[in-house]
Image (tube, rainbow, N blue to C red; front, side, top):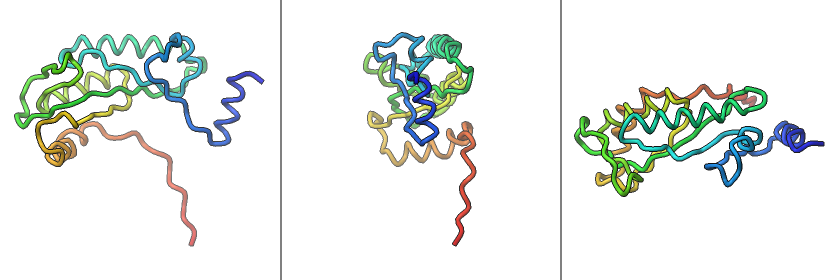
Length: 159
């Protein structure tokens, strides 16, 4: 039985999906053949060229998925969300943290979405504002613009 066949039968039995981070020193072809999803570095997030490079990376990977089926792409950003909603996207810490207002974040998430990215992880531990304020702003102004994917229909509970 091939590795792919074993993975398919394991998935049918409820195996945990394989989300590859970066390339894990594997070729892009290997990631296309074996990953159930891919988490990559977001490229530069303070200007549109970064999401454009990310789009090329995602398209190249998806062309290598043997069955052409959907596989999610994930990326992340360390975020310092400032109070001024119009503060421009500004790189900090060598580009590893993005300081921006909510409009800059909304623009970035839209660029990522158009690039083919499906899930974003936003780390707020470097934010200068209290976490509760940042989370409130994200919940009120940002998340409604990027609704979650539909999930499976919940099983009926029979009492």
